[in-house]
Each structure stands twice: as C-alpha cells, then as structure tokens.
Length: 388
Image 1 (spheres, helix red, strand yellow):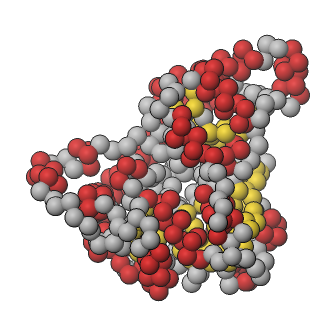
Image 2 (tube, rainbow, N blue to C red):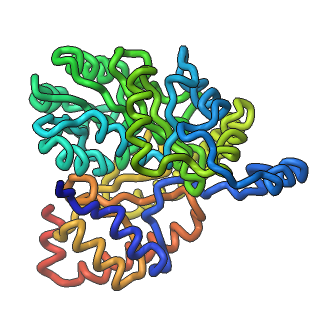
Image 3 (cartoon, one colour):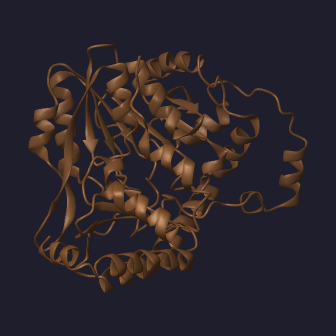
C-alpha cells in the first residue's frame, strides 16, 4: 500500500519550531494543567494515579461523558482514540476495501483524501463554493456532491464545521448529504472536531448524529476544547460498527494513555465542559475582530468570508504567486509560518490561525504585509496583482 505525503502535517512538524511567528495553529491557546485541575486535591489525586493501561476503548466514564454530546448515545456507541486523527484513520481503514470509492469534501484537512486513496484507491471530491449576494458564505456545491456520489461510493466524508473555511453546513445542505448517502447506502463520516468553537451564539453547531442510521462522527479535544496535548479523540456511531472498529485499534495504539483518559473525564464533565467551550468562544470573539481589521486595512489585496466556527481565517489573496511558493517565501524571508491553500486542495488562499496570542499574531501579519509591499514594488508583479 502506498500513501500520499501529508504535506500540511509534515511541513508544520518541520517548521513550526523554527519560525518566529507561527500563524499555522488552528486551535485556541491550550489550557494548562493548573487551569484544567485548579484544586490541590484534584492535582494530588493525579500524582497518586498508577500509570497502567486503561481500558483500550476508553474508560466507561469517559465514554459515557462523550456520549452526552450525542442525544440517545451510550458508552457502547463510543470508541476513544488517540486524537481525532486516529479516529479518522481507524474509521477509513475499517470501512474501505480495495476498489471502494469515497466522496471527500474540499477544501478540507486532507488526511481523509490520502487515506481514501490508500485504502480504497479512489477519492472523488465535492466542494464548498463561495456565494455572493447580501450574505456571503461558503456553501455546499450540490451538483458536485451529486456527481461525486455513485453506486461505488462507500462513504461520504464531511468536515463540519469545516477546516479551513470555518463554514457550517445549514439544514438543507445537511439534508442533501443525507439524501446522497441514502441513495446508494453509503456511510457519512462527519469530522466535527471544531464543534463547540462557534463565533456567535451559545448553541453547538448541528451534528450529523441521528440524521441517518449509517453515520459515524469523529471528534476530539484538540480544537474546541483547547486540549490538543491530551491526544484524546473519539468515534461515535452504531454500537456494532463501533465494536468492529475497536478491533482495528488493537493493531495501532491499543489504548489511550491513563493520564489522558483521566484528564479527559474531567474536561468532559458537563459543567466543566461548558466552561471550557465558553472560554474558547471568548478567545475567538476577542481575537477575530482584530484580525478582520487587519484584513480590511489590506483590501483589495485580500478577500475573506468570516468563519462561523473555529479560530481560523481563510484569506484569498490577489497576487501572482502560488500558495506553496508564498508559504516558502514567508517562512524564509519573514520567519512567518502560514498554511497554504494547496494544503487544503485549493488555490490562492492562506489560512491564518488567531486563537493564541493575538498581539503576536498581528506582529506576524505585519510581516506578511511588509512582504507584499516589498515584492509588489516590481512593476511587472504590481500590474499582475492589480489585474488579478
């Protein structure tokens, strides 16, 4: 079996510690241990914890607390994994056989496309598209979905809320995905790791859970919960399918770590869970207006549709340089790391993370602005940019 190079993860691993300004982060400032467990008694209990193997599918209390996110679910519907990445890996490994096809949403975190090509052999893509009018948003391209889903399609992969756009499918669009899946008996695999990081309001983004019998939801604590270092994710789905996928995990990480399982139980206690998600929303809502002000100050070079969820802004740029070349030049010339649109299956876009230190983010964006100002002094490039 051959597998695509996962460019986004590989380049972040190579460069995120070598630049002065890392704008590629896609979550919020992580919680510290003393914030997650503020009382001395609780921390003392952690120090007494034997570092044994926990239950390989996650402790029953952890699975019970995850299940509270999905009405009608119980611990038998949950498989705890080592991060959402393993949840996606296990799901696609367990569902796809050679010759199967997967319909994969673009733009997207491209793990699923790489896995679909490796395990099934074919990934057919459907797209979100920019809409114009009184309300601009990233919307489902229904025709591309209908073309992508055929009788050979084993699963439809959506990321909702989406990475990198921050878009959330509306009810009609979700119904369209369900209709396409039902037409050929395909699974829906919905990566919902940004659910809980909404830009406005207190309600969680809608889930695909419960809309159709053949739904598997993957998620975890890395984005909306600000706990990426715990490496706790999960699969939620029909009990029999979850039990079958559990057997695949026997060949990978076997089990979450004992401390991660215990800390995840604390984070997912309903009252604590709501506090953590409220913190994430406060950070997003405080930081985003300052990043948007920078974008507006650089029109017409940049264009942008605001995210509905997530601490990420996808920015279109009007400049005659490919996104990977721009990524390399910003890294080498300005010591700024952004994520190029090519790493999500699209063109002249960059993704900017704004969930960490917003003052430092703006310092990095000032360097991006300085780069464009310096390079655009070349008359040929300036004319091309203005005509783009």
